[in-house]
Length: 251
Ligand code: R5P
Figure 1 (cartoon, rainbow, N blue to C red):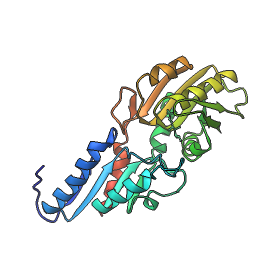
Figure 2: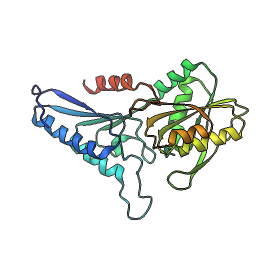
Figure 3: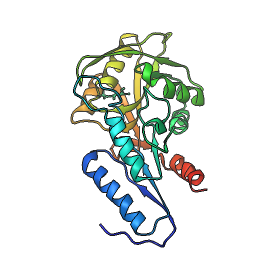
Figure 4: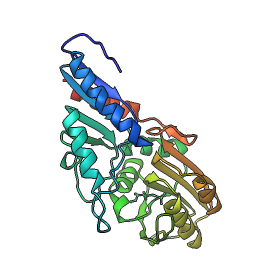
């Protein structure tokens, strides 16, 4: 890897870090190359930041990956920007990534929902989803509800949702879809309550093999995602939100 740039510039490295291990190493090496190549300041824009979900030691013997990766990136970069980092046990990204900032994509999701012009209840699968579900619902002026999720292993989950008050259409909003277990369980809960049309919006489209089929079989009509990870479901661009944050960062 070789980088040459005019001395004294602010370099912004943009890389989505899904399928992360090789990319993380390359990204940290690129930060060093940029500095040695003359950058005065190096910012990382990682629309998807990996290892944020392992934010505690859930079982004895496990690492707390969020801290390890966060501190590593904090040492390599002057600032780290990402989109909807999975912050459940902490409220700000800079508590685990020094000088890190997680951008809310709620305005872009709300805009997408408003364009659909179909009244719906915005539903979050669990209490952890409440902050962004509430933000999306308020910005799109739609009612909202949050379910209760119980995990039964890596892929299986059950969800219960109350407070739908005869709703016929719902949009599930979640930050990540991986196995699809959470979206499927939420969709089944909504169908049980008589909701006729269920769509889903996720921020980070990880989607393991078979996940989209599983979600469709559970009765989800359409799944869309933000383009933080390239995927066939991408429909909501995060570039305007990142660009606005970079303009502030660069001042
Ligand atoms: C959990 O805390 C997250 O917000 C997502 O609900 C979860 O990561 C989705 O994973 P999966 O698609 O495997 O159920």
